[in-house]
Image (tube, rainbow, N blue to C red; front, side):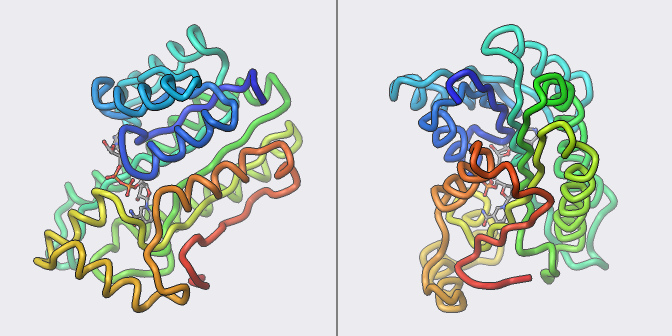
Length: 250
Ligand SMILES: NC(=O)c1ccc[n+]([C@@H]2O[C@H](COP(=O)([O-])OP(=O)(O)OC[C@H]3O[C@@H](n4cnc5c(N)ncnc54)[C@H](O)[C@@H]3O)[C@@H](O)[C@H]2O)c1
């Protein structure tokens, strides 16, 4: 695994940062991709200080040229990426009757168009090497969540994308799987607590009470699952959606 190169989108913070650090400690070199390269500095520093290799990639996953430039840069510095984790995400929650076209488009563009562009840009390296791992970040919201018609549609869409990719690329030694996290403590859930006017602590307590294992999730919970899915040993696991939510959700 030492020679392998991964790219993780939305890796400046939260779940993406935890995945980038975990994959680096597993021995992969990591392209830490987020909107602003400077924002990736902490993740890159944590990896290099721990003895790993990483570079910051500033790119908007919904922009074709921006993605192409980032992947070209990664290929010419750390090497050809054969692991892609499509984790970049945004929320624009609202009930349908109040949802703007902009809020719909933004969520579709970051999650679906972003995963399409980044996966398309990296698949050729995987096909060439006859080995690859694609991980999509879905969500328990894919099965429906009030106030999230845009987000739940995008997250369900990513599950269909994953299954189709598994069918198309399996013969090249490439697996594609999705992780569907439940409540994970990050800036994203903190922002939701702030939006609904509840302290983040109370918000977490209320969420934990509804979760079978009686706790909320951490970015490390998701990083552990991503580490498994990209490992050599998981080569016969493909087209799956793993709900990492402290209980059954689908
Ligand atoms: N936190 C949760 O409870 C939870 C649950 C289920 C799924 N998820 C999903 O996990 C992923 C990570 O979530 P998080 O909680 O760490 O969120 P976060 O908001 O803390 O981090 C998301 C990162 O994505 C980056 N990003 C946003 N738009 C981008 C773009 N166009 N191009 C490149 N980077 C972009 C942001 O800058 C940010 O660094 C998201 O896809 C989210 O939908 C989160």
